[in-house]
Image (cartoon, rainbow, N blue to C red; front, side):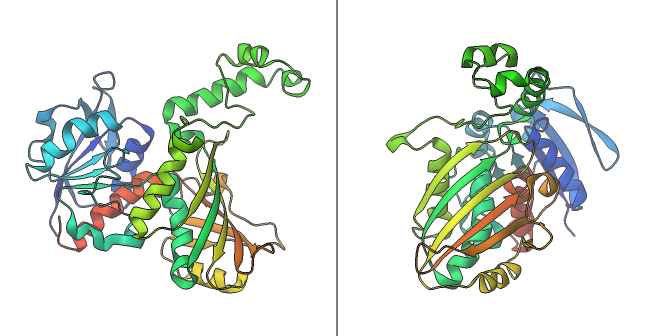
Length: 346
């Protein structure tokens, strides 16, 4: 089997560290691993297959001789380097939002649209974490019965905003736990923020954390709308509301779907049981349903609470949970690379 020189950019961030872990777990055929990050993180050491790998500052020379570059360093590094190194023969899988809607760039969830990889020009984009988790549950139902409309509410963990946000949640919890009266007795926002040490704390709270864009939707909501159309290849009307919640890892998504033809909950469960990358966890008698705390660190997207929507002729409610750092980002990126190898594209 061929082996590859691989670079992980943004290697010290939450997604970057998870990429390195997954490359090891899945025995990806790595001949050489290089790790890139900002100058501030340069010099840190990560472990890969028991061996130390020193993190370098991301510069042009880091990419020399690299076959595959997995970018998890945000828009800046992707904008600066992705196309430049792709022109020199490196295949780029980019986790940022930079190229997702670029018509030159396939936007890929391997279980759904791997065929679009054949049209790649050197850069492949990883979808938004919530888009991936949602579509693994939504697309099998769409293929079986046609989705006319989906109303979506996300419950997104702080890890989606990076390691700093995970640290901030813990700090805010420690600051506010000794003062429950602030959370129950009508304290002013200024009082709560003074104890939490920040404006709009996430601890014990829910936030619309993304900038408001056109038509009153957040940028995160527009990502889900536009990325769905590109991935599926046709317009599925998506009406999303995205919310940040004080959980550490794992996004939850409440889906209400209106179908072209009716599916019973039992039929929907069977369709989802057959779907790659999905596990049905729906046990009302024992209270076992998908939860972020149990999905964290695991690969599948879990679906439960599958029931009829009595307000429309052919509607279903579903609850979907997945690890946003794994299938929502790092795992999907590695699976893209694995799929390209299997297709003879890498």
